[in-house]
Image 1: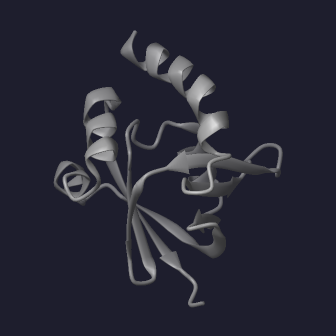
Image 2: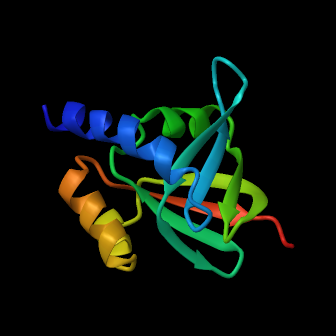
Length: 125
């Protein structure tokens, strides 16, 4: 029930958030369509590594796209960067989540049901 409510919220909020210039956006390649898919995410940039936590583990569509093809793009600060995403089930996702902004960590822990850490190794600029 909680997952359905969160999915409904995302269907409304994500199209709006993707258009905000300050929002970090993850671009994956659709595993069936082959088309670019954009998902707003929150996390933290650390040099050439971007860290984020998936609130629904590896079961969301964008995570299944990453498992099919981990070559991604991320829009950070209005600029697109390429890289590769890696799912880290062995990482302590709750501890990683605690490092993020209040809004991001509250949304992940309050709405999420299976936190999973994702590391994106960005190509040098």
